[in-house]
Image 1 (cartoon, rainbow, N blue to C red):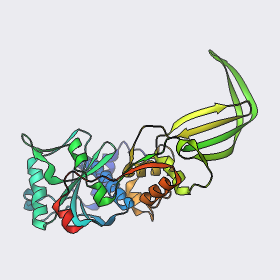
Image 2 (cartoon, one colour):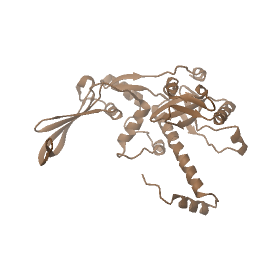
Image 3 (cartoon, rainbow, N blue to C red):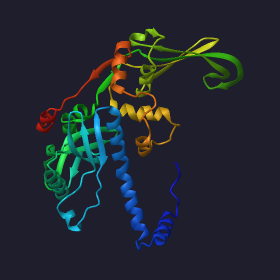
Image 4 (cartoon, rainbow, N blue to C red):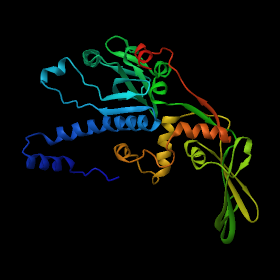
Length: 326
C-alpha cells in the first residue's frame, strides 16, 4: 500500500486543469476522502454477500440524480440486491462504531421516499467495528430529531442469516494445529536475569492436526484444516532436549460469525499487515482461495470433529416481504 503524496491537492488540481474543470483542489480532495470512507464498506459488504453463497444478484446503484431538485425528495440507496430468500431489496450501507446508529430525519425520509416510490423494501447494512448486521429500516425509531437503532436491537432483528446465509459457529475444544520442530544445532547461548537463552538452528519435521478433545487425525479435508485460520487459537509449547512441539488449539470459550471468518481467511492468504482491497476481491474469480463454500466446509468440519456448533439466526420479527417472497 503506497502512502498518500504530501502534495496530493496540487496533483489533483493539475489533473482538473488538464481535463478542463474549474474546481477547488482541496474541496475535491476532501470529497474523495469522504467517498473513500464509504466505498470500502460497500465493497466489503458486497464481497461478504457474494461469498456466503445465497446472493443471486447484487449491484451498486448510480447515485447521480437528475434533476438536481430531486435530491430534496429522494435519496438513492447504495445497493440493489436479490437473495434466494427474496428480493429485490434496496440496501443502504453504514459504518458506525457507536452503540447507536443515527440517521438524520430528512435523510431517513428521502431514503424511504425513494424505496416507497420504487415499491421495494429498504434494508440498512450496518458495520459496527468488525460485526455486520442487516436490518429493516422500519426498526429505526424517532428520538428527539433523528431516527435511531441500538446495536443490540440490530442483532435481534438481523436478516443477514436468513437472506445472505450468515451463521455463527464454534470450533471444537482441543482441535488444532501442532508443529514438531527438531533442534539441529545450538548456535548461541546468552545469559539472562532468569538463567540463559539459547538460539538453535531448527527444522519443522511434522505437521499434525487434532479434532475435539485433542484426538489426532491425519485425514482431515483441506478446507477443514483452513477453518483453524478463522479462530483465535491458544498457543503452547512443550520442550525436550531434541525437539519442540508448538501447538495452536481451540479453547473452551468463543464463538465466531461466517462473515468475520472471511476477513480472517483473506488476512491469512495475503502478506502480513497488507490491508484487504475489497474492490480487488470483488473482481477476482473467487472471493477467497482457501474455502469456496463456507457453509459446506462447516458441515464437513462438524462431521470430522473440528466444528462443535453451528447456529442459524432468525430475527425476532421476520418481515412480511420475506415471508411473501420465500
